[in-house]
Image (cartoon, one colour):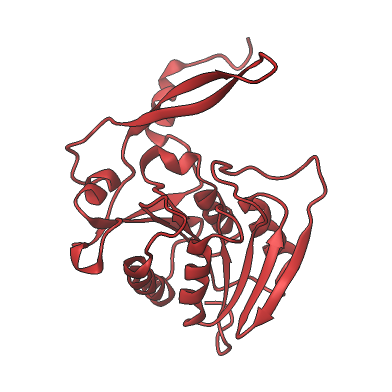
Length: 263
């Protein structure tokens, strides 16, 4: 691990914004492990996935530093926060990047839209061990007491065992008391999709506008090795993710197409 022999340093970020309760809870948990640097979006950035700021200048402002926690506000996306922290703000790579605690689930295909997991994946791109944490509760004042206990266990396990290069963990925690959570399951990502709908409305000027709505469809509700199955039964789900999206099985089959090199 980095910083061997010194106090460990942890980068904390999120997509719900600098004022989110989940961020404050996560920073507090991480302080028990070492020095904490929080770099979080100035405003909520849910659904930003791996977006970065390229058409506007990126600004960052230090809010405070006390009791081993430095707090920075970044006027950009979650991935912007990770990039500017790792490439400008921090003197060296952190020992671990943690993103969250997200207010709401990031299981199944939601991971593709998630700013929380976008930040964790960006950490893995930078070869920083990274974890994204989410609680299945959208309330801005959600109870994170059980989540804190499991986060401590998982962080300690990652620090003790490490993670493969370019791999991060997607951790989802049921909205339940500690005595109601049955334990932890290592899972694969569920195959599901969002059935999107657009609620059409009309503004005072007679112009149409739309709100995205919809519901999640679980394509494999009986598959016992998925994150959705685990969460539905009050298990904490842990899905290892990597940045290589190549379908290797399909890649091997494409050789049989025998396409010409030239059109």
